[in-house]
Image (cartoon, rainbow, N blue to C red):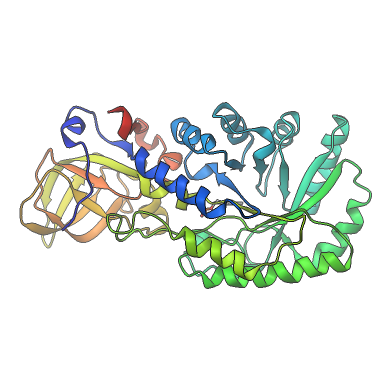
Length: 385
Ligand SMILES: *Cc1c(COP(=O)(O)O)cnc(C)c1O
C-alpha cells in the first residue's frame, strides 16, 4: 500500500496530536487554481472558515486571492493575514451589529445578505456611519447538492438565503434603503460536492436569474456561485488535488457572463483539505471481544468531522511496516461517537506508533475545541520542520 510521505524522525520529537501541513501541496493547489482562472473573468474568495490558521491564510493571500468570511473576527483575521479589504466578502445568516460595523469600518468589498431584516439593519448601521454597503443577495436556489444533510445548504428547508419569490418585494424595499448598493447575486448550495451535475443545476438557476434581472434592467456586476467543490477523501496519495479543471470548465461552458460581469467563487475545502493531516500517537492497543481497538491520543475535539457527519478520512500507520490487521480507530474521549474509523486495515500497530489521519486540512483545526479541558492541537508546516 502506498503511504503518504512524512518526516517521521522529526515527528518523533514532537508532542502529539498536531496538525501537519504540506506547504508544497498547498502552493501547487493555489498555482493550479490561479492557472485555471487567469484569462477568465473569474475570481476566488477563499472560504476562511475551512482553515483560518494564519500561516495558511498568508500563503493563500500571497497568491492574490480574496477571502470569504462568515464572522467579524474572520474579517479581522483575514486582514491581519494579508487579504486586502476590497477582496473580502462577508456571508452568514446571523450577522451581529458589531460584525456589520467591522465590515463597514474596513470597507470590505461586499456583504452577502440573507434576509429582509438583515438588509434593513445593515442599511441603518451604514447610514449612521455615512457609508454605503455593497450587497449581493444570497438566493436559495432549491438545489440538491447530493451531499450529507448537515452540509446541504441550498434547499428551501435550509435556513440559508432569500427565496426567489421574495425578490420583487426586496427590490422594491431596496429603493428606500439609500445606504445599500446592490452589486450582485450569491449562491452556495453545500459542501463536499463530488457530483458536478449539482453545479450544472446551479448554472441553470443562475441563468434564469440573470435573465430575470435583465428584464428588470438591473445591472449585476457580480455573480457569486459560492463554494462546495469536494475532494477525494478515499485516495489522498493517488488523488491529492480536487478536479479544478472540470469544475471551472463547467462554469465557463454553462454560464454566459455579460461583458461587465464577473464570476466569483468561494472554495474552502478543495483549497486546503488535502494539505493537512492530523498526526497522533497510539496510546494503547486494546483487545476487545470481537475487535481490536486502536486508542489514539487524538480525539473528536481535535477533528470532529467523523463524529459530526460520519465523515471518512484515510488513516495510515506511518511508523509500522508489519502485516496489516483490522482495527477500530478511536479517541480517548468519553463519547461513543469519538471514533475515527471502524474495522479498517492498518499495518499492525503498537503503543507509540504514529498515525496519520489524512485530508484533515479543512474543517479540522478550525473546528477543534477544548472539550474535556484538552489542549488545542498545535500545527507544524512541512517547510519549517
Ligand atoms: C462554507 C461556505 C463556503 C465554502 O464551502 P466549501 O465546501 O468549503 O468550499 C463558501 N461559501 C459560503 C457562503 C459558505 O458558507
